[in-house]
Structure formats: structure tokens, C-alpha cells
Amino acid sequence: MLSAPAARAQSAEIVVRVERNPECEDADHIANWVPITITVLDPATQAPPRDDYNVVAYATSHTSEQTDAFSCGQRSDNNLGTPKGIYDCTVIVDHGGSWTFHGR
Image 1 (tube, one colour):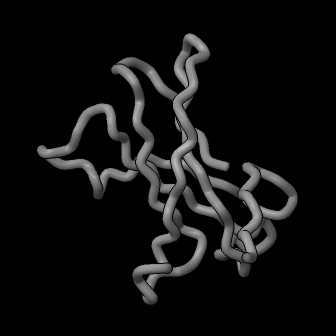
Image 2 (tube, rainbow, N blue to C red; image 1 turned 180 degrees about the vertical axis):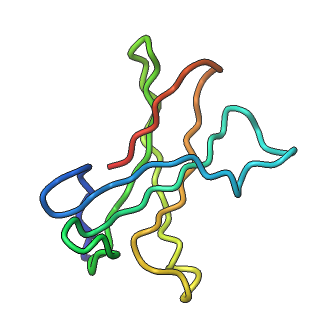
């Protein structure tokens, strides 16, 4: 079985951008389930990469706590009109507070 390479943030090969996904937040949204979008780009062209990647998202708190790493799904796998390199993720934090979100 072939496996996609892991994305590495800001490597020479790719650029990884992590953002909260406001499209997934609504009144029914659970506060500890945080929707994240991770975008992987070619650093030279700022275009989507040719390769697929195994992307995960996680969060760290100001007290050095770290959540589990959660697998992300590539949006184009389910929507052929979407460019490659955009990954949808959900990170579950244990409690409220200040968290920093990461992708790799």
C-alpha cells in the first residue's frame, strides 16, 4: 500500500498555512471541537502541490499541553472543483482557554 508523505510546516518543499474555518462554525457548533483549514502550497509558485499529503492538526496551550493529532481530509477528494492542497480538520481541545493550532 502506498502512503502519502507527511506535510512538514515551512519546509523547502512546501508551505503549510493553518487557519480557523469560519464556514464550519454555527450556533450548533461544539465549543471544544475547533474546525481548522490547512492549506499546503508550493513555495516557488504559491500553487497547490502536485503530491497528496497525510496532514494532521493539533493544538498547544500556553501551559504546554498538547492535544492529540487529528487526521485531516483533502477537500478535493470529495469535490473535484476544488484545487488540491486544502485540508479540512477538526481539533478537539480538552477545555477552554488560549490554544495555538498547528498542522503538519
